[in-house]
Amino acid sequence: MLCSGKTAAYGQLCQLFDAETQNGSDMSLYNKLLEAAIDSIARTFQKRAAAGLQSSRDFVIPNEQEQARETADFELITWLVIKAQ
Image 1 (cartoon, rainbow, N blue to C red):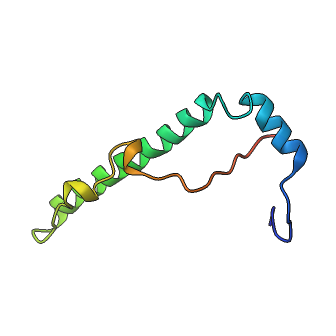
Image 2 (tube, rainbow, N blue to C red):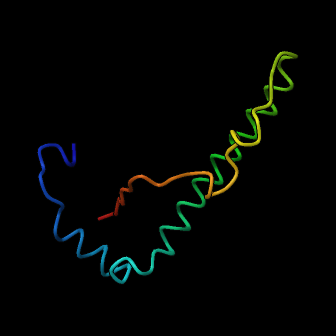
């Protein structure tokens, strides 16, 4: 495991990330990636709901509050950036 037994962050990786994001003030690249992931989750949710409607008369569409649709429906609790060598 990458972080197993580690007590501190990898300094060089943190410096690289800070340089690429202007010390976290420009997170536009990572925001775009996050939005793409959330869009994919929402599309998958919609496809499963449509499939459920077609497969069973007992299927119940989840309440609107339970449906994932946009970035605001999620809470980011942590992040991991994976970089190619």
